[in-house]
Length: 233
Image 1 (cartoon, rainbow, N blue to C red):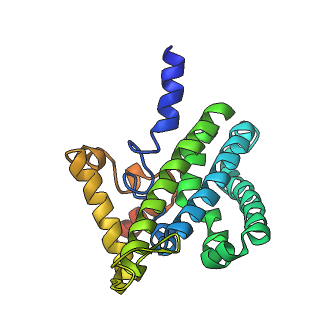
Image 2 (image 1 turned 180 degrees about the vertical axis):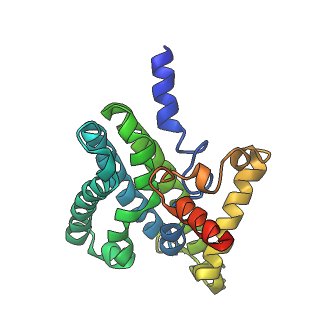
């Protein structure tokens, strides 16, 4: 029973409790850039989810084989392979979506959500749990982008999935579809999560180097220490 509960917890934590966009505040660049419409947001979310699930499984299986010193480059190679497959699939079967997402599809390779889950979870757990983690985090990412894209499309363009919305289609708020509107909707979504959880959702999360998924390989703290020593000298 406990095993089933733990598996369920792994699957569901990425949807709300550790939502990568609204709670962990990761993947901000694609979140703001691809949520100009609901379809674009969902397309980006599904693409990233496919890469996340596949890369998590492969990295989990290869974790004991990959040398520790080169694990990040190896993770990137694995992720890049799956991103290339997703890119070709979109280009072949959904060319309009592929054209809309543009550069942000290949940029999934360096998406901090993908690399973060590879380093923090997939490399330390079995393939099945890693797949569940990828599904949960992917669903959370997709839902966040889909909702933000829907809100921006409805108010910014007066449509939802290309279907005109009464009144709003004749009086769209154009700024919502632009970059400032993306920041505003993103801020409102985070504020809503914070409000409904009484501030507990984001309060416990660590920000800065200590809470970074890449802290073990980052050279920033060492560089800062060397600069401080140089200044003192």
